Length: 349
Image (cartoon, rainbow, N blue to C red):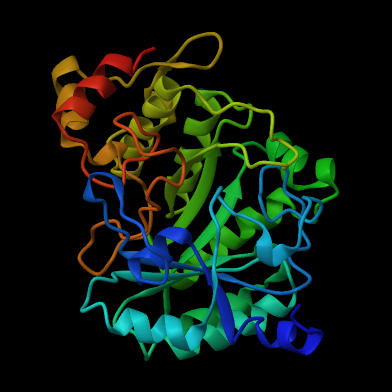
């Protein structure tokens, strides 16, 4: 049994948790990826014995979810605890295979200064751009400025719920949580003014009870704010408050993915699309040939995340939304012909 002093020494900023996929990419855990997928972004999560003070209904790190914080899963996988020094050393032995490093904050006031400390250690030590997934509830504009000065080139803001009522129900008052919709959008605006157009990613979760119309409206709001949408499909975490809720249908998620691509690429927005009385997408105001050509690119169905210096998505979260299969909610690689045929067959189902 580890004593209290030893546990304290294994907290951030000296120690950090990293996703299972990142641990595999750095050789800390054994395993291989379906269809030879790569994980070019190393995703890190700050770690504290007392855990996260938020209680988001869908999150594996929620305050009221059973278990010790260090042992809680997040996006349904383990996050091994490793020293930051070891992470830096292993990144530098990957011969440029790491295209981005992302530090994810939790809602813990210690996180604000520790994230800045870790950024200032990482930025000059690794040959990869640095992102931070911020925790707006414990941050002010000055904190964003300090992260940018320390070497962060992109910021993530996990709005998650696409409407004020869904956000409040699952992140705010509905779960005795501290988060507030208006402050998150203020942080998005501040971040765009600091990091620049297209340098802020807004996380949105599909499958929390919203309509496809509402998702498209919010993705259009993101684009109009100068940010980009980064989509996640809801996939229930065991013992979370939403453990019994199913994921969105594959067809619904495919449609929203295509809508995101069209919106972020400036091809169309929510007002250009057509919907049925239940708010489901029924058309994109494009010819069949043009839509088929866009689907055939494969990229609209891939994970939307922060890019590396080459402009290609680096934060591709391999199989973070589903188990490895020909039918996936976010492809971490270009879909092949078999997968594209299935996508076209199921798009309007």
